[in-house]
Length: 300
Image 1 (cartoon, rainbow, N blue to C red):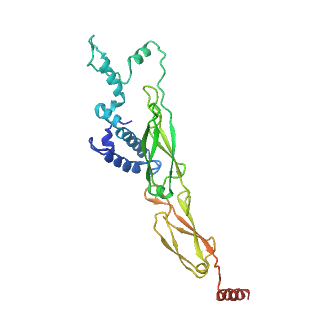
Image 2 (cartoon, helix red, strand yellow; image 1 turned 60 degrees about the vertical axis):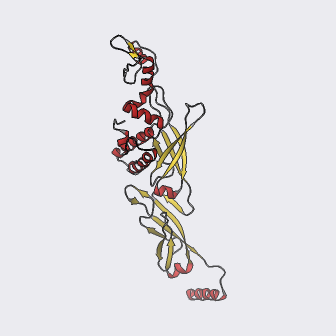
Image 3 (cartoon, helix red, strand yellow; image 1 turned 30 degrees about the horizontal axis):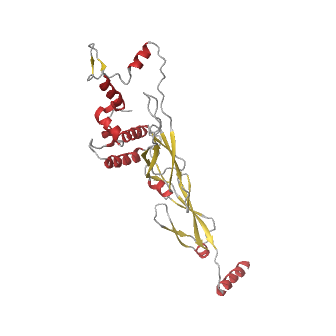
């Protein structure tokens, strides 16, 4: 990845606390998420860099190594081992305090390459998948979920908590990639990735089709015949008043522009209100007589 400073990528000071780092990450992840910027390769690259920076700085151990070794923080254990066991001295002496950077390669790698050693090539770790559920309202606004990643290298099965930013407008079945959060690879190779599969819980009122929403709206028969006004709920939680013209039919559809799900930059789908005309029940004597008169009039 880039050699830029992780703190600079997130726009925080080096001494920033975890809360500040987490808030900066959430804000930037929402801004540069590929689902929000479809087809924008620069935004996709920025999103990967932000995720890698947060993965390192949100973990106390990796952050401590990064603060000390910078871009070479992944080789921190090798550096420590060289200091404890002594390093190769080009002047012909062995010294416990001498550090010699082999660029991530140990002596076995060097001599194995020279003399045809049979060392295995490093292999990247496996990708993993986890599932999480959100509501349709959370898809509309965007949200954050914390998923558990079991650390297979720990004998006690200790899990690691990873925060995942769910972008606005995310669809059911979407796969959100967290770079480097999968299983660890062999020595010298990076870990795999984590894919968070998003499931959207079925809504009691709205049905989603693409970026549009559909809703069944109950209308009294009198209002459908004579015209009237009906209240339309929206996914934003704000009710809208819709005027029903006279002689509106059962199943007639009205389109409310921009009241659907978000997509792209400040763009939204539409809400389609399907009229469901309800018939009156428990009629009074007078009402029955009026209906009878209407039937006679229409028969003529």
